[in-house]
Length: 85
Image (cartoon, rainbow, N blue to C red; front, side):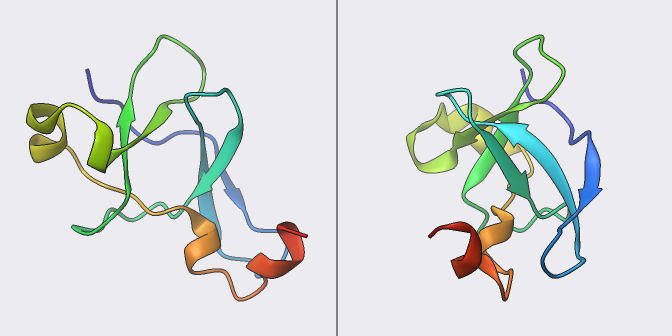
């Protein structure tokens, strides 16, 4: 079952709007709130407070085909390098 974005916020580095999801390993991931056809993630409702961000390339093709796709905010953030150090 697909999910919608929730828990909107603002990037502390660049000020852009973002939404929070979690990865399959339970880590938080910031996502750009606007879906993109080439986005890397689809969102799945796992019953938690935040949607689960699954890599579209490795997830159920039927769900991926009919779901909006999102990119992680680090892909667009001009300050992403400061957070990955």
